[in-house]
Amino acid sequence: MDYTRLYKLIEEIPKGQVATYGQLARLAGLTPRQVGHALGTLNGAQARRVPWHRVVNAQGRISLRAEDGGEELQARRLRREKIVFSKSGRIDLKRFAWPGPFNPDEWL
DNA sequence: AAACTGACTAATA
DNA sequence: CTATTAGCCAGTT
Image (tube, rainbow, N blue to C red):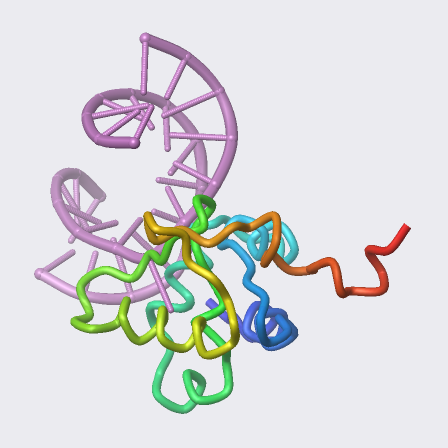
């Protein structure tokens, strides 16, 4: 499969905001699983240009499995962008989901 | 070809 | 809150 379109979409997520797999899936006309798969098969080159760390699951939690330290890396990157994790390790999507309250298009 | 396996989600219980 | 279920689909065994 060609996930170029999806990767482009992810590149548009602004720093300090996150998007869910399902949300990206709807925007790209894919299924949530395809989005997860697309990110899971990112090679080094694209991982360098795609902000994969800004993608979390529908519960506002990090979904990386297997890869050791991967979850920590993602959490670290998000915190560096001023994203806040609740005590239970969740991100408040109402506050950090893309497009966030700072996106002019979302202003009434 | 069949079975398994995920960086998923939404709906129920 | 956790657990289960069904739907999902590309890659890997």
